[in-house]
Length: 355
Image (cartoon, rainbow, N blue to C red; front, side, top):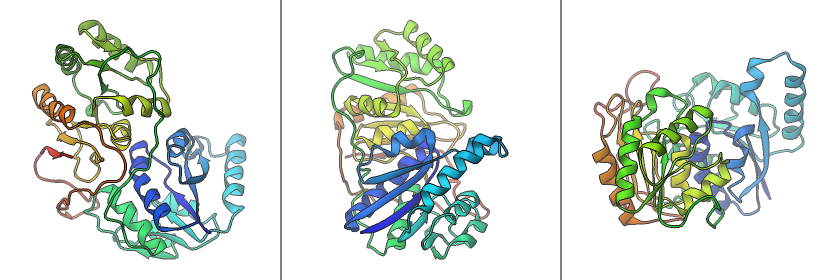
């Protein structure tokens, strides 16, 4: 038996990007016992992967706000006892931050992480016993896969598999027929796509006899979804859904269009064809990748038009769903530019992968 503690605490998209590394470890390491430390609100996502043995929740964001509160001390103590109860064969910090590197030292075992030239916060590397070089020009998924492969000493598989298993079946609130999912909600306003664009997209979907499901997470997002539903036919505003319920909806969708949010990555991870919409960030290092059709469109200050998104959705619908392991197309890494930021291609561009 090989016992591993994996530290990847946040955010949603980053946690999903780490799932293929878990699949690799499980396939390459017979008898793997994998514990995963993750932010409490994301434990449900980690639970979607069957290779995770134990989830150790952390609430670092809440603790930083109230570091001296009694609740913080109790919760931190519980987490410390949880990771201190085992002797690990490897402790892998896939986050690469000073705070997560310090957390890793609470666990017994060889502490593994990126070397100083590869890590996001270079001082974090000083906390590791074993440091590994990983190109800063790789996609985030491949960086974490490479780190874990080096830490455990196996050859990186050519195939990639998120390993996520979504529940099957259609939820009762969803009417019969084919449907698209529109992921319009994002924590950052500049990452959004104009409401009029979603209305036009819904109208085009309705013309093709496709419903548009608009999930939401807070009251402002629900209000936006309801405005879109009043302005266009065939729009469904579901009840508030948790991650497992969302994964189920994505798994049954004809295709998914979404802004730069972790949910768009989850949709691809469960095998849905995805068109990702970028308006304030680049997709080169953190774009959507998955077993089915994927199109990453736009960039900072250059969001794609409705015509561009609809054209790619047509390709996504034609390509259909695909799940399980696949062999990613080789992608030339973006240039390693000077400074701490590891990516900045010169122009916004669309990246499309067809299966």
